[in-house]
Length: 210
Length: 332
Image 1 (cartoon, rainbow over the protein chains, first blue to last red):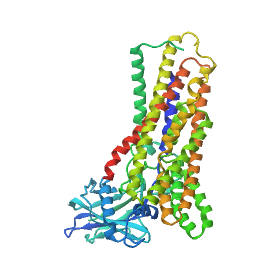
Image 2 (image 1 turned 30 degrees about the horizontal axis):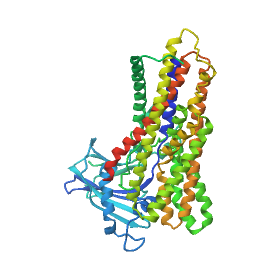
Image 3 (image 1 turned 90 degrees about the vertical axis):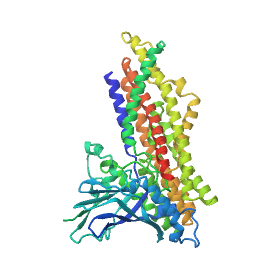
Image 4 (image 1 turned 90 degrees about the horizontal axis):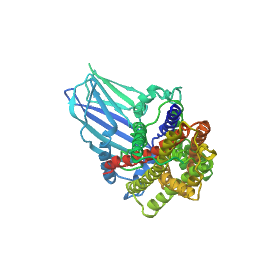
């Protein structure tokens, strides 16, 4: 009976490992983010500009009609932008914010638009906080837990504070790229504890105000 | 063969089996929860589960991302210089090799199928290559018909893919359920026989049983037909990457390059899946040799592995299908 369980366990584990190796992004997003502040110093929301990769952009535009071939105006792209933000709602816009350690809730996206330039699409939208908040420590992370979408910040002008009190400081914590292919323990406990792996690739915006 | 067991006894063992299958399901459920999320932007291929960030898996993952990112550039290069097609095909093949670690390539389903059905490594190779070829053909046909003939939008193509997926996942469940039934019965028979004859030597432990073979059941003419059902179930769902590459090549006016790249991706995928399938078949054979000549529990263990593998197939199919149900909301 011992043998039986041992073999069964071996079979299950080996199959589980095979299955674990399933992952890949098919959409790449270069993002820049603005944190919007009210005159009283509270954060009211986040404005995103997400630039998609060329292959996904081409795919998304497939079959769409435009007055001029290869050129899409903002108006022509408006229906697609609406589909995008409506669908993104199901994924909480991949935007996770905390103020003083507490999760913040966002309302529906507004002021959304799509632009097509240099053969890539850029989606812009504003995510208002349900309740504006004054925060000493504010963090915003953007990532896809399933890692279907790869979000990354450009090296320059990734984050801006709009209307924030002058003493507020913003910092960008980049993901540790070095972890790719470096660690020797793929099956360690932390590996399993970290199944929410999209977060490992996230860049975290951290704002501190006095 | 062992005597038939009583109804109550059979019921008991099936409950035990179901519990075992359930725990496997749970394990996989935990790992695969994210297996099937829809594309968050409302148009586009389906989502994949999260990547391992480190170790060998992390390296594989990083490589396939790297090759994928090279694809669009390679296609652009072919547009200006057709000789660059060699580079595109090379990148496509390598992408396929690394990408086959991803979902939709039936690696886990094929491996489980081979283990459950006690197939040979040769048939594992055939299954791997045939399903990868079918996957490439489906992607090309889909984009060819949808984009070229109907000038369908990305959304419509996504809808088509989802219908194909439902059929594919339902087929996987059907194949797994059939195997679970056959193997579950064999397991219960073995269990019953083991109890009956434990004190004595097993009269049915002749050569054929010790090899875990049931020639009449597995190697008969029906075997290939069943193999075909596995090929269709696994190969039906086109790879998201292939669809994106085909659309991109089409937009650049070089659809032929996209078709070539898709076949090369399929070839690369098949190589990886075949290697994994061969390992699975080898492990099954190794287990078979270990238990050869041992008393009842050994055979029981083999039967148990087969049942577990069959349960895994059902679990994969069910999770994939359930994922579809969840993601449906995302497409309005």
